[in-house]
Amino acid sequence: MDLIPYHWRIENFTNGYKGFGGISFQIFFQNSLLVASISTLATVLSSSCVAYAFSRVPFKGRNLWFMAMIGTMMLPSQIILVPQYIIYNKLHLVGTYLPLLLPHFFGQAFFIYQMMQFGAGIPRDLDEAAIIDGCSKYSIFTRIFLPLLKPSIVTTIIIQFYWKWDDFMSPMIYLSKPNLYTASVAIKNFADSTSTTDYGAMFAMSTLSLVPVFLIFLFFNRYLVEGISGSGIKG
Image 1 (cartoon, rainbow, N blue to C red):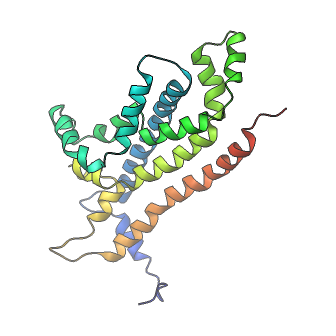
Image 2: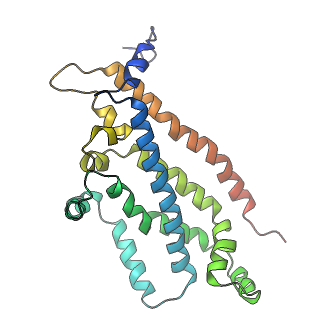
């Protein structure tokens, strides 16, 4: 067996793109793009707000809530899988995209902590100067904290998009209709233990599924480097 094949078969891509059950693979790619994009945007907005509150806004019980957030990072996702499913099932949300999207609107502990660590390097003198100029805490967040957080935000976009695009377990559990499947679940359906498995189509679609992730990294990597080099304070 050679890593590089001697004969290239384009029909594997055409057969794979036809999908199955009368559903084109374009639908599965669109579903994955929708879920990954919304969850990434929600994660960036919610996590940056929580990170700003923890690092810049004094409030009662802040240390307690911070420790609780850190504690959630130590819990394996498999532990909360069953309780989450029971909750979403009672809310009649199973079979929709909401179980895949809702948690991201309330912040993700990993990215909150990452933004807090990056935000610690932003001088508080900027906040004090903004307050003297009449800025509120909301203005400080939108005009100072968030723009200077650009490298951390770009890192969040790259990692979160990759995680959500590559997620297989959650869509497999919560989605039951084939027209709602994401690309990761749809690729698995090319493998059939009771019949013939179309490995050519499966690997062809697996290759195509890498393109969006590669493009996201290629596009935002430039902004990541620019943000790191340009986020310092110039005298």
